[in-house]
Length: 189
Image 1 (cartoon, rainbow, N blue to C red):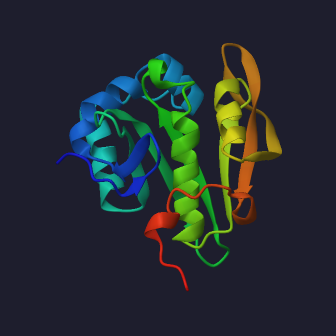
Image 2: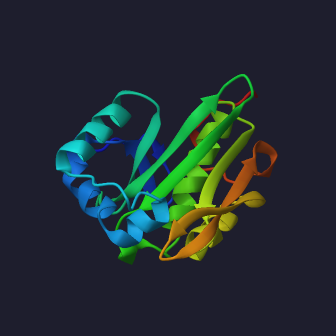
């Protein structure tokens, strides 16, 4: 089996990343639309480099493939990183590779599932993410997942002769309203 249903939502599940998907990820990350939104457009990422990234991601950390429940189609990936268990904080990152999969709620559901896991299993209290101001579809997705803007870094990304702000968004444990994992988690009677 290529994917494992670690965290299951209503339309998708999160599985540990699989280095066998390197060609798909390399295709996505070399799509200028994707790389501009991720801030990686200046990097050259070939198949071997992407495979090395995925191998490292598979060895450690909270790095997940986003997989459609119906048909096991790879949609993208998401991660929790910069995890500080003392302060109970982390950062999240997410992207959907194929443009046709965006705008259908997959990103929102994947992020909700990832954050619920972060709060209920990893015992985090605050998860933040960063997004460039021109990526309005992503900002709407994050807001639907419960994130709110708490700051910005002005003129921090320069592309196409224009400066753009980097927006900082966060979700607190008390504001997480999803319960995808509740059926699997133990409860005190």
